[in-house]
Length: 302
Image 1 (tube, rainbow, N blue to C red):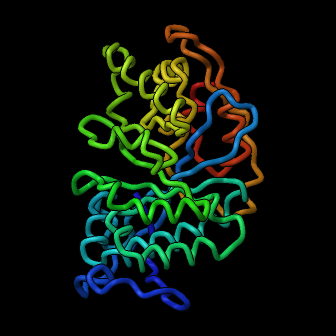
Image 2: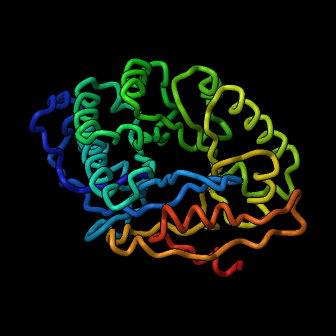
């Protein structure tokens, strides 16, 4: 999920609709942003991609990320999402210029044209920034009404902003979205990869989704990768982007000066997984694009 604390600065932007600007005078939750790498597989030349994740601070430190997001959005509406975007964009300055940044927002915020105006104002503030931004639509209050979001999604994509559907998995009513031309990427829910050893039909389902994504031109990201065996299974069926503890735990972005470090860590393949192969390209990309990212698991598996 997302991040931020600072209130939105409305200067030079449209004001948010009253019903979404602030529902109660409750204090904006205080929190910081961590980032987690989304890793390319099977590529020697790759661009970086990270997702920003919310962590509570101060009196909100004990809240789960989902509780923070719910509290922030329920009390502050689209203003909370806009504050999240602002914080993510500020932190992105510490990343390489080519690194894409995943920012989670509530889909209902896109129903407000004023929010889209304010979002584009901030994203387009610097040349080349829009192409780096991936807005991740999160589900936590029922199905995402993508059709209702169509005008906003089309407008954002026209300016270069990419759209990802997060937590795609069992029970998702948006299977047709993969062919609807409304999103650029689909992130598979971790429940689809947790038990691949004992669920051959699940692997077949994933293979079908990979083929569908390939034919529709979508990027497919597998989330929740924690073991080499999962990595190898998914690599074998053609999943090209992965995210999870295997590649590093979420952590704060370190100062730019600390980003010159380089790691030689790599994962040794699991000989029991199909088509086992070294994943040096993944770790090499981590070293180039996320040198501040925690890679404890990679080193332990060396």
